Image (tube, rainbow, N blue to C red; front, side, top):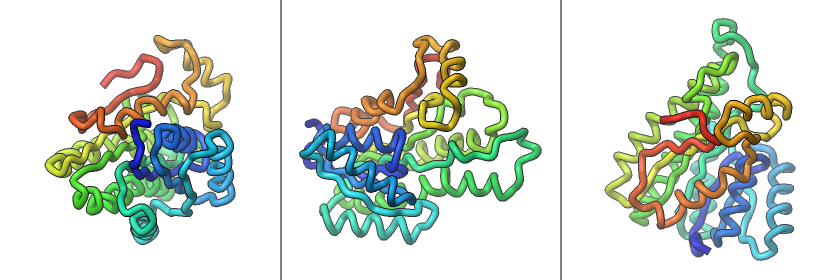
Length: 249
């Protein structure tokens, strides 16, 4: 129970990686707020966590990470209920519904949509929780990036660029928040079995890795839990690739 008495927010938690991380944080003893735009899926995620972990302290909040007002309301609601915010897992992003194609054929509206969610959404959340963490003189901010930043994947340039931008945000935020005892890090999953690509494609990609199996959402949960805990209090401004080997910082 290394996260006992900690309060965590996980964005994009209705399914996939976010839901899996939220469940693991509950298992580690944290009170967890799952947020997403999809309220029906979000309620289902909370029910699933409680079914597997009857003692889990978790709740659902509908949040639009692209709206600073929505994110600030989230922070207000969480602090009103729990009195603090210890952990932010900034996971919300567009992947499954990407418009794929050569970068020169991408429309500006699609480029902006991806950056608005994947990059601006992460900025909004980190900026909103920082004052509370500064007041506490402690906190953990973890961005879920992508191992695609270290590769050259065809037809998802907008996605890769939006995640690459998080590196700069992570490093600058870590520098500015370090004196308050707040760490900021980034976990980069490889292509994960969350429905964005076919299982056949995932298995083909896995053959080029050191560990030749498909990345599953649960593969992210261990390192995220470590980064969220006091055991990582001297680790900040770092990227950690969780892709079975093949991408290096």
